[in-house]
Length: 278
Ligand SMILES: Nc1nc2c(ncn2[C@@H]2O[C@H](COP(=O)(O)OP(=O)(O)OP(=O)(O)O)[C@@H](O)[C@H]2O)c(=O)[nH]1
Ligand SMILES: [Mg+2]
Ligand SMILES: [Zn+2]
Image (tube, rainbow, N blue to C red; front, side):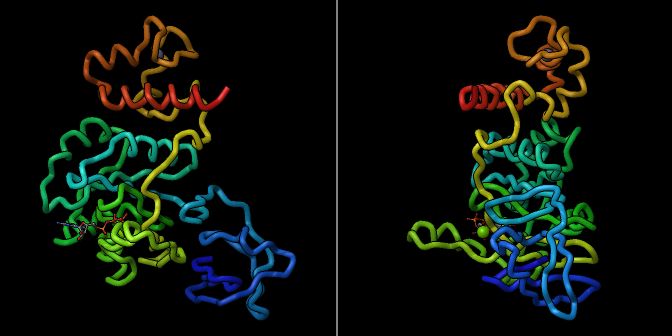
């Protein structure tokens, strides 16, 4: 299902779109864009929701395969937000793709991104305004259902427009509207950008509260691929890589193999998760 408005649902099947209603007994607010559904083509009615692999609430989207997380030099990158978004992805079965945007303004962070994240995550450099890197990004998204995320002003709308065609998302406008205190919620819609590849036109998703992550503090380390790789060499199998002796992660930190920033943000997130739960 690729679009929803009140009680109407746009179901995409066999290269066609069917505008459907849902069976009366179905709670329509529980049907999300991105849901796979069984439907009656003649009656134009959704009969059943199929199991989902994940669900986002803001924006409301189901069955996301990849999340493109934008980072740029202006506004200055918030790596803490980036790490939380990566954790959210890893806990939800979503592939995180790091996208260094607005590279026409400079590529200041490319070196750091590749050093701290490049071994375990896809990184792509793009400029929506100059049309640079779009093909490479599209190749990474092929066959997937995707959305964009990142701080306000990183260029999500501009990038969506560069891919989908201008007008799909309002560039440079959302923040202004928020300042004026207007409600900017709009209907989320999935666009088929190439065969079997869907992109959400939403510009939402610019913050994340780690206390909502479905991860406990003590298992946090398992969501850091660079820790997972080395953890078997820690003295304790339950090592949290914080205070234990003979910790392989702390050794890798000293040698520079693990990025100091990633580790410090891990400490912060660990402490926040510990404090928010018992
Ligand atoms: N130089 C340059 N500026 C860009 C590029 N992409 C976006 N911008 C500018 O950056 C500002 C923010 O871009 P948006 O696409 O609106 O950012 P956004 O992430 O959608 O922001 P929110 O909707 O507030 O979350 C606008 O003024 C854009 O014109 C780019 O590739 N190069
Ligand atoms: Mg936007
Ligand atoms: Zn350890």
